Amino acid sequence: MARTTIPIVPSTARSPAFEYFSTKKDEFVGWARKFSLFPYPFVTACCAMEFMAVSSTPYDTDRFGAALPRFSPRQSDLLMVVGTLTHKQAPVLLRVYEQMCEPKWVMAFGACATSGGFYQNYAAVAGIDKIIPVDIYVPGCPPRPETVIDAIMKLQDRIAGSHHPIITANF
Amino acid sequence: MSTAIRDQIQRELVPEGGVASLSHGTLVLEIPAGEVQRTARRLASEFGFDLFLDVTAVDWPGRTPRFDVVYHFYSTAHFFRVRLKTRLSEADPVVDSLVSLYGSAGFMERECHEMYGIGFRGNPDLRPILLYEGFVGHPLRKDYPKLKEQPLVPYRK
Image 1 (tube, rainbow over the protein chains, first blue to last red):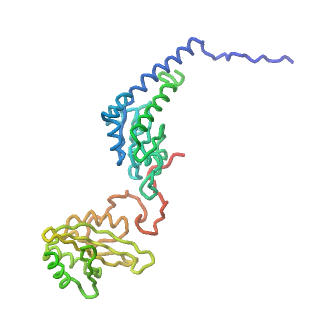
Image 2 (tube, one colour; image 1 turned 60 degrees about the vertical axis):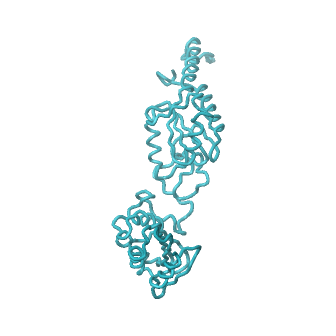
């Protein structure tokens, strides 16, 4: 009985030149996307004060390309949920999230958006990740501006290192 | 000045079975539920209590009657506050509305209605104001479970 040989290179493999080009494409698109995060501030509570502080001059998220808030979900990439989410607002948040175009990222800003914070009652949702997927969590009540900037930088690193399909699922 | 108005209210407005006391500078009148509208009308028209501050309820589980309904009034002429308290039973927690006297009572009675289930006879619009349509129960009653949630959006798995 003849032993079948296992091919080392799968027959569907692309040429090395294509693989190299694809990687460089992801790097380039990731670089472009990480410096053009257009945030949609879904501001519901007192964390808004800290959001204003981190957006304005002393801390200035414009340095990270994430300063210009778009008040239309169709024009934005980063959904910042700033504050407590109530059950009454949850359908609104879900609708805003679904209206955003791909690629999109979600930041849970503050203790309430992350986990419900100190609310455990009939009105508050215990964390927005029960409603929509979250990419990065920012702890604090409210978070220090440094924490928010750290979260933006971590999100940028993730965007820069991830796969960015543009034409097909593989490219 | 406030002493004069205080004595006058105590003399004229406390019905039989009612109690008047002073708490932190506020005159507290405890009256039967049937007297609330009449007392509030006299406060508004004769004593110059032109500002209706609040109506809310207190739930005393185990006590009969179970609920207190608490009203606060303020007079901008006399710089004086009056608190009305009345007791309502669990079986029939209904009191007369003050919408005809103070327009602002409408919203506060709506809130009290959804949070405690107190009925206000004569209020034409007792829809939920802070809660959403379809919410079952009265969340500020003491027997509402602390961890009970009624989500509008199904949770992600």
